[in-house]
Every structure is written in C-alpha cells, then in structure tokens.
Image (cartoon, rainbow, N blue to C red):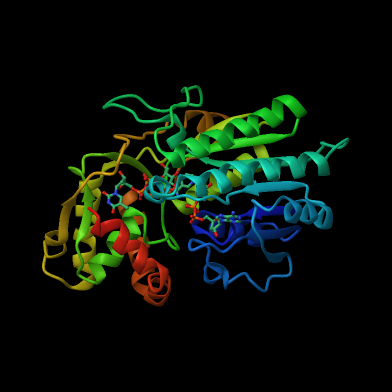
Length: 350
Ligand code: NAD
Ligand code: DAU
C-alpha cells in the first residue's frame, strides 16, 4: 500500500484529482493537505470523505516544520502538488501571497521530499501541476510546446514559472524524481465563481452584469476538468521522469464568443427569451497586462501516452451549467461572506 500526498485537494482541480485517485486506486492511501483558503472547500469532497483510503489534514504548505512532520508521519511515495494561489486578478492586487504559497510552499515540499527520500529515490515521484501561463502570450498564430521559452507576464504566472524552475532544479541538482504538466484553462463543477465561466453562470442566474475585460477578444483554450485530471493520472503512472507534458483542449474561444454561448445555453435551460442573458454583457476596464492568447500543442501527450480530450466544449459547458443549476446551495455558500467583499473591490474599481 503506497501513500500519496495531494496538496490543495479541496480546491477546484485538486478535488477532482482527489476523487479520481481515491475511487480508482483503492490500494493507494490518499492524504489531502489543504489550508482551506477562500478557494478550498471540503464540500467539494463530501462524496468521498468517508472512504477508508482517504485522509484530510488541514495545513499550510508555507509552514516548513508542518510539512516536514507530515512527510515523517506518512512516508509518502508520491506527491501530486496542486495547492496554489490561482487567480490572476488576485495576484495583481497581492503578489506576495502568490510568492509565499506558489514559490516558498513548493520549495518546502521539494525540500521535504528530498530529505524524506534521501538514499532511496526508487519508485518515488514528485508531480508538479502547473499552467500554460508560464509561456506568456501568443499572437494570432502558433501554439505553446514543451520547448517554448518561459515568458510569464503576471505575478501569478511569474510565481508558477518560478515554482516550475525550482522543481527542475531539484531534478537536476538532487536527482529528485519529478514530472511537470502545464495545462490550459479548466472548467467544470466546483470551479470557484471568481473565474470567468462560473462567475458568469452565477451572474446570469442572478441577472447581474457579465463583466468582460477590454474588448472580449482575448483567447483561452478550454479543457473540461475531468479530462485534465485523467491526463494527470496518465502522466503520473506512465510519463517519463524529468519530463514536462503540455495538456490542452484544442478548443480556443474568444471570451466574448464563450460568454455569448453561455448566455444562449442558459436562456434555454432557464426558460428565458433568446438573447435575454446576453443583454447583461458589460464591457469593463481591461485586466492589467492581460495576455492575449493561450493555445496548447498537446501532441507529445497524445503521441507518447495516448491522451486526448474526451468532451466537446458545448457538451462540457452544458454539463457544467447543469451542475451549477443543481448545486445552487454550493454556489450560494461560496458567494456569501468574503466573496462579496472581493467582488465589490474587484469590480467596483473598474
Ligand atoms: P484553486 O484556487 O481552486 O484551489 C487551490 C487550493 O489550494 C485550495 O483548496 C486552497 O485552499 C489550497 N491552498 C492555497 N494556498 C495553500 C497553502 N498555502 N497551503 C495549502 N493549501 C493551499 O486552484 P485550481 O484552479 O484548482 O488550481 C490548482 C492547480 O492547478 C494550481 O497549481 C494552478 O496553478 C493549476 N492550474 C489551474 C488551471 C485552471 O484553469 N484552474 C489550469 C492549469 C493549471
Ligand atoms: O491558462 C490556465 C490558467 O487559467 C490557470 O493557470 C489559472 O489558474 C486560471 O485562473 C486561468 O487563468 P485566466 O486568467 O485565463 O482565467 P480567468 O477565468 O480569470 O479569465 C479567463 C479570461 O476571461 C481572461 O482572458 C480574463 C477574462 N475575464 C475574466 C474575469 C474573471 C473577463 O473578461 N472578465 C472577468 O470577470
């Protein structure tokens, strides 16, 4: 029986990853460590919380003594590192929070793994979950490959790029067995409604303005979250040590086209007149340093490991909307309290 640490397992992607590993691998003990920041929510995991191979530990990856004790206690053979500050707009307001968790937190984990696995790196793995934003911004053409030079532009992407560099430094310097994946924009259930898709779903339900930054012409490559965690599973088990894999949906949308598609589907599902929700679209001041376009070339993952996305976007979006409509209590819980203050500060300054 091996014990695997998942960090940030109460967040959006982390909760899907935790669910997949707990249910698919009953022979793994999964320990989920999460600080339960505003983005972490144990309600994302109620369906698996009583599984015998699952343990939750509340804790902060910036706390090195806590992390070291955890490695001593559980003798992990693998780490799936998801915990991060993940929202670009928050990184513009408070960059240091991103340095603390994304950079220092990652180095604390790398250091603890190195010490714990000293003299026996065999069958160990530190898997770092990262983002396509480290590659910077594309023009109208081209794709990010694993060879694209890093060019992060926001405090968030700079902190993730830094963490990627530290992971590779531990591989080259200390021979720590590592893998990294860099993924495009995810969407799906349990996505915190500060991000574009769940924020617009929430606002459409409540007939509130849909804030579109700039002209809405920025492009993102969207992937259903369950496809992302399936890719992580494939890479974790079959990818090569020391390698990086890009994960993407081959599914590029301008923000304005995406929000219009969302409005169209939601009008149908809510029994509203066609075009009603699109009237909520409101152009607001652009995000500072707003990257124009992200697009992933995931050929390496397809050719070497046979992974492909499984869902068409319209279908994934429909599933996602249905989930939010069915889980309005979840949405109401996460948008009460601190969320209101964040929303006021973020959107009233625009
Ligand atoms: P999220 O913000 O939804 O969840 C982050 C989780 O980490 C939360 O549960 C939070 O409580 C926890 N956390 C934050 N700081 C912590 C700390 N100091 N100690 C312990 N736990 C802490 O993020 P997400 O969208 O699920 O992203 C997960 C990972 O995937 C991140 O590393 C992110 O960079 C990466 N990623 C995200 C996307 C995306 O579209 N969301 C795409 C590519 C990569
Ligand atoms: O590419 C992967 C990244 O995708 C992840 O690493 C990040 O953790 C994740 O947050 C996401 O970053 P983005 O900045 O692309 O996601 P977000 O949902 O914040 O914004 C998507 C696009 O929509 C972006 O061009 C900004 C725009 N936007 C966003 C918000 C919140 C708006 O126009 N209005 C909004 O209110």
